[in-house]
Length: 133
Image (tube, rainbow, N blue to C red):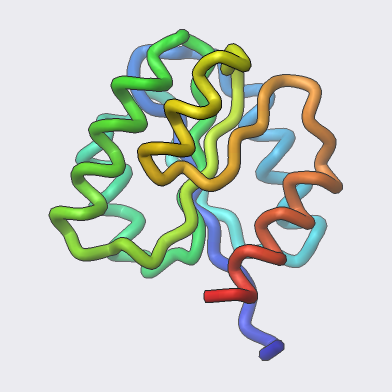
């Protein structure tokens, strides 16, 4: 493995105004040696994809507490495909019911981390997946 830092764009899409968890995850990823770009609240999905392409990130992480994770992720994956940015790892965390996990994975969301997921689990998952690319 090279010394290149894993670059993560962490975003809060939509009207969801709760970002404490996203900020805590951002700190955990930074503490693990990753470069994290946090977009802040209320990011439109096209803006998230545009920033990810411009920053040439390895990972897009979404934090979604609103319950709109399925349509938001569907739109994100569609725009990623349109931008030919298919090599990016996409993970999502927040309030994600178990019944929606297979739906998200079918879309191409590789990592789903509901509330209560450990930082170690998230960091390990990202490191392993990015190293395979």
